[in-house]
Length: 182
Image (tube, rainbow, N blue to C red; front, side, top):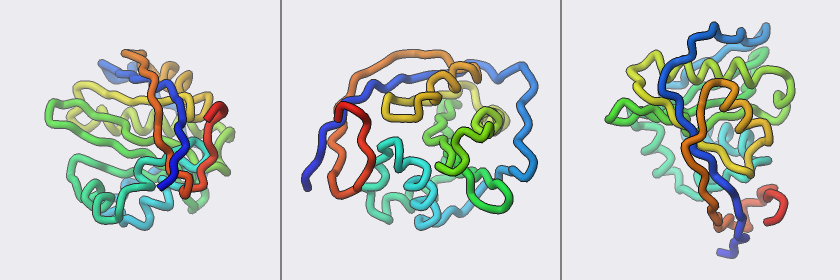
């Protein structure tokens, strides 16, 4: 399968304690719903729609049975942001045996980017993690993500732990928008 090499800088972040400030409220008509038995097709819809513009490619390459195993893992939870009854974003949390929780995926649907929901939705993800036996919260972002991702994580209380340059072999058949310089 032909691929295009994509150069990115990945930033790893952590939060050692829950935020002390009160959370921002979600806008009227917005709610976050946990999806305890997320189907593979719904997950693919969320992942593909949120990640299409940011070169989210890895899980697009996994077969359905591998995605199903991830979704069936009791350590993984999917939470969907709805606005006026339709999906507006999602986040995925992975709880690890050592008390660390990783915010594996976080993002908004294209039609909700720039509408002022990101900060409150991120805080919801953070609070959800800390409310469930979390002793350390981690997340990573990269230069292919939305340009506000890193500043938003830092404003929410995450701190940078390290940065790594990576080259991704993005399959050409996925039809993804590749970051500049790819």
